[in-house]
Length: 553
Image 1 (cartoon, one colour):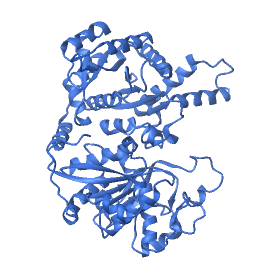
Image 2: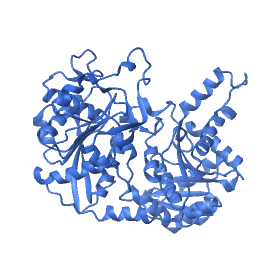
Image 3: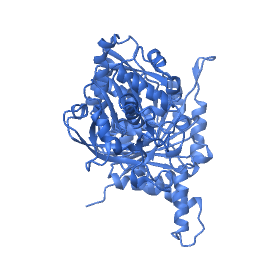
Image 4: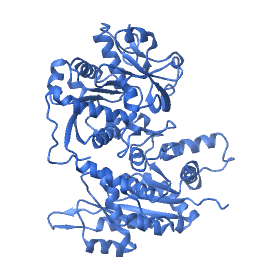
């Protein structure tokens, strides 16, 4: 039997950053999956950090975690949500990781004393990740996005590596897509093609000639501009495709399909596949368009100045809204602005639910505790994720057990009542990150709980990213006071979820459910949380009628 030939698609960008290369790559992945192909996605990032794990959320946005525990760029969240495939450690590669791997190999003698150079050693390391993703996933198509902007010095090794892949695999097995900005100049009332032309010329100077050019613009650029770009950039007219700004990013696959993107790619790669079956995706878009309700969720965090720091949480709330016939409006609340219950009453007067997501460090912690207290005392649906669960436990220990100093050993290492702490095997001089619990772990759900109601099963697997755990020394006291330990590790050693089972929704989970939510398959906890928020509107005295204007996702 002949070995399966994986096809490779490379997505680059030019002119400016933030063009939506990730959404373009993710949308194409969904279209190809709808044509029966197995798709794997990948992001090559030019920054020198080894991975995004220690980067500031306020600068870089959220860290997305895969099943195998790899800390990755947030674009991988888009990939997973669109193609509904679980990615792995080969799906994200940074310049830092490339050099880290190469230098470690050099120190171990792997290069037999050779002079280590950008070509071939650095480029070979990059290519190994591209090929390893293909083999580890057995994908029909691998879609690789090159981060940064063509012309940046940081991106050059990646562009050289994909040029080599194109040579090694043959033109019939590779497709190069270049995303460019077509700016609108209001003074002359026209779109301008020159930036796109210059960007393509720069890319061609690196030895890569795009097969398809995606035009990012706020409105249709017109046939003259498309024809000009086709002529001067040496691509066929049907291979110049618009990617316009849409009210919802989930409309992008249909827009690109209408523009013929998947047809062009399939022809370029000589793939014998049926037309795209977009029935499920269209049904989801129909649900989005016809929502009749609305609810407001307060997101209480310490990184709210950059919404991308909570990107997967945002999208998961929107997904849950789709399934509950509701728009979800997020009210961004800076936890440092909640010094007391009076501030909470003002901040939460118009909200139907409160969510406290993950985070690290002691800044803003007391404000989060105030939010959890407000939710508990006023019967407002509450959802605590990772740190948000720990906050819930700390607040319960203070407000119900009477431990006024209840805290986490992350914040008060010598505290008397640290209800959140490192486990015994995490103690000692362990390098930072060595105590982290990362990736997919099982959890056993207690019957008769809100958790069991949401999941509809007792054995679940969820992704983690944290260091501190529920302190088992306080299990009995907290449970006796009414806190339900609703989810445990299969060996019973770790408390994974807690709740107040007598409430419509007051749940905390140590893991990150937002990483597994999909627009057409919302996560059951987010779905249950939004349903509870909608149900609470009557008791809270809020209106639940959807506004005329659609939300921007």
